[in-house]
Image (tube, rainbow, N blue to C red; front, side, top):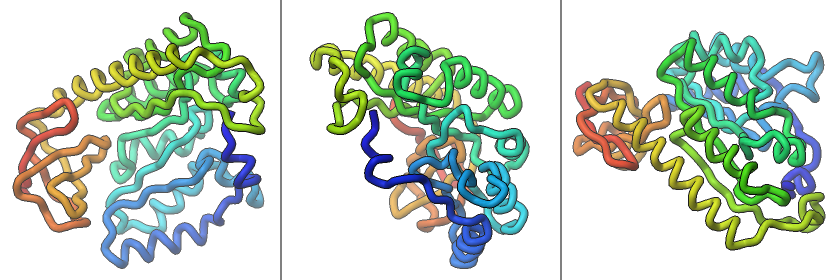
Length: 269
């Protein structure tokens, strides 16, 4: 269904040594957070000698760049979290307790038709396991509304997985056909229905986000500031303060309130 692979070709992994060197350089320049990203981050290493898993890269970064305060992952496939990566996510406090999943759907038949590598239960089980080991974990996800052949029951499976996992950081996309992809040849879902389903999914995500933010009131945490009054907490929550720290710095925050969109706090150290 996605046109990106046709445009970029096969995945190409940057060798671990080069990545570690880049992270070292960023830390020397004063950067406090590094985000590992890629079009298909989960496939890192499959084209390298020995086919190392993503967890091996993360382990090397944490080992050889001890001065890095915070490491975060961008979107990954929930079926591709290897044992080493899971252990690091749940035991190393420099790893942000946040995972954004390329979920796409909560229905197994739709996932199969999308040729995804995970099932609904794979995603649910992974999130439950991560939260059991590290309760502060939060999750983001991409979900497509109205993939061809998606009926009401299939849509309800996508809707229900938002609350079943508890996904406060939701990205919803209405399906749109891309010429040259197999999905473009399948009879589409009515556009009015697709739009309505996307709206319902976004509303469910907004409710999860508001509920999550309320749980943070009264807590303290470290925020990474950009050139605004907003800082980003390790679990991806945004916090607004009247006394921001310098851009690029990490600062201790006390949280005293929340809106449906962000936390409200103050820098205390």
